[in-house]
Amino acid sequence: MEIIEHLHHIETRIRQACITAGRDPGSVRLLLATKTVTPENIKIALQAGQSLIGENKVQEIKEKYEALLSTPHEKHFIGHLQTNKIKDILKYGVSCVQSVDRSDLAEKLHQRLLQEQRTMDVLIQVNTSQEESKFGVAPGEAIELVKQVAKLDTLRIKGLMTIGLFSTDTVAVRNCFRLLKKIQQDIIVLQLPNVEMKELSMGMSNDLETAIAEGATIVRVGTAIFGKRQYPDSYYWNESKPVI
Ligand SMILES: *Cc1c(COP(=O)(O)O)cnc(C)c1O
Image (cartoon, rainbow, N blue to C red; front, side):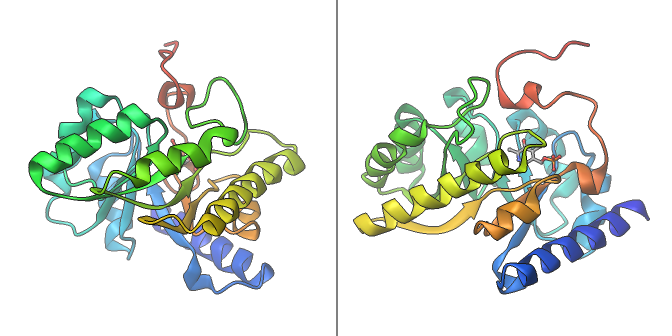
């Protein structure tokens, strides 16, 4: 089965990257980026020993929910979250929102969690590539956002997330990951209450080795496991509609 072979290949790449970086291979977790992937194919990967998926669209989470109920897994949200979809995020079993990038989103998430008497793990998404088209708080505003989110006691900040520059310029890509690590270090020094900075979610199919070398604890991989997607990523990373 192709998916399983691809999965083994990714596991090998992660292990090798850890060894090269002098890191414990157990210190990096693989998140399956499952946008557009059918529940059947997601199940193949989960049954092969994977445990974490990430979705970009609330609609897709809803559509796959029933089919995945009987297969144990953890689910993170890694896409742009509109405040009117917060209710659904809570209803459909998301355990961490990796894409908190503005205070009004954090505030509304908090209000809803208060009503439901629950908590939620979150990562703060930083736009390290500074491209207009990508979501995420500007690097210079990340610490201020972390401070604001830290005041909301239903939200548990676990770390930071970024999408690196899409480029063959490996130096430029590496600089994105370095910047995220630098922001993490700057935040750790502040010792803010209610802020854990353990997780760095960075690195995808094409750049996971670089991300691991720079300290990633979660790599998010889609294409290299499930194959090419039909929609351009811009459909998921900004508000523009795909050209079909
Ligand atoms: C699609 C996606 C990924 C995975 O990208 P691939 O290049 O397919 O591995 C990772 N992170 C986010 C936020 C994504 O939307």
